[in-house]
Image (cartoon, rainbow, N blue to C red):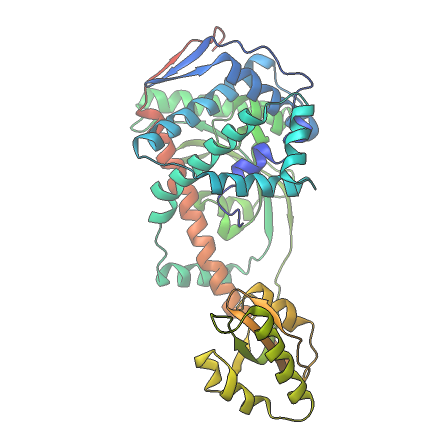
Length: 431
């Protein structure tokens, strides 16, 4: 199952086999924060802090003081609780079938089946029931984001044209690895709040230029969503970066730290960690093929259909005309009218089962019978060609880049509004 909506889930959980504590700790269910009508418990904070701490150690990120780390983790848990409450009010649910499919995919990522995955978790002292509940929560949050942000994003043709034009003028096909620290501002911030945030940003920048480690400072000080990842934004092209970072990125050298950048969210500090790449062509292999499709029904079993296709294949190899047989026998009405001709196809155009069989054939060769979701087929490859699809690829990529940029910007704004509009009462002693 495709996992496009779960980057935060995988970052938190896919490596959990390596990040679990050696022994399950006794749950301490003291309330550490009241969030609207809900709470965050000490046991939740302890468990998540242990996981994040282990992940930071595995990435060789120097840990901030424990009280600072716990505050960052608590803020993340508070934001999750706010989102889960909103999802509940909207009756957003995750079906067991979808939950189990994602658990199976995570098990496969660790080279295990689901039963083996559960045993491995429990052998490390972690409750599979708690793990399953955490996965469900992250899926609920992903679905909430889809409904509230992603599904509402529209990309116009003019926006695509503007991006392509700017890329041509800038000739920037490089990828950037940036890290980021945010000093956040609330909506409608007062002049005093703005002044205090700016002063705090300047102090952080001075400490960075004096040699303090950026990733550790991001974990300890940043209000950004990537704080617990050391502030890393991952590899992105300039067109995939938040708009206010794109021009800054082009002018930074490796290891260089930007001046403070002001946005509606607050003040930002950006470091150029690395850059790579350049202009590339996108060449694909197209295949021209034709096929004959038969479907099992009440009169013909799958075995009988397979046998009929075997007979047709023998006739073709014996000299009978494929086109004539396809017109007479194929149950794909559209292609049968063209003698089974499917025209030129790009990678990904056809269902995986069909493409797998077709890719193994040389031009002129006819496949053995095989099954797909549409029925049983034999396919013949007529010819192949290489085609430069750079322009089409760039246009599709530009559409996705505009969409992702708008999602990131709208998501940050939406989450800030949620947080500002929520009631939070801290009960953690050092919060």
